Length: 253
Image 1 (cartoon, rainbow, N blue to C red):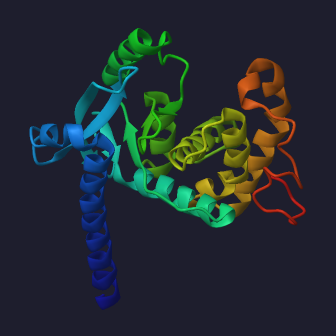
Image 2 (cartoon, one colour):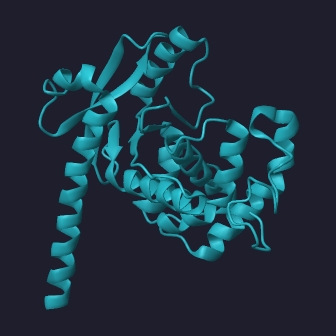
């Protein structure tokens, strides 16, 4: 019983520490110009930046509630933020670069539709076919309602992950985390994401074997991107190239 209480106390302290980190990261992501606006959010919410004009002079902010499980509203998901940050740390270790932290927002459909209209006005395209995106150089990962529904199903609702249902959503989280890490080229990002999918799956609570199966499935379908989405494809994504995160290891990805 004592061990249980100790574990529970540790878990509570971890959640508290993460909550403090989330607030700090939100202010960091919002930037100095939006720091005053953060004070207008209620205490249980934090300010998140969305987008800017071409010259970066205007920032639109959303007050988003931090949560550790689905709440039916747009939320900064503490657990997914922690997982994305861990993926970035793993990438940083493999590449010998500095790691950073990430915030992950799960948008509900109403807010996502509003973001899509704003995105279309600013950049010409909406978000209807987007699983997730990062407005670099901010450290905020925006996940679509569909992406979060599947992640929530396997993480919070006890659903069974499968290659058919879950591969894209798992790899999306890894892909967007790499953008926060500073990787901007989409083909490079996708190549790295496939190699870190096993790590992402494990961080989400799945087995290493399942994560490896997802990575192999993604890589098996990867050549199709050459025609369907060429910006995400590179012939250099293979063993022994500069894009190999684990040079010398036989298996790829």
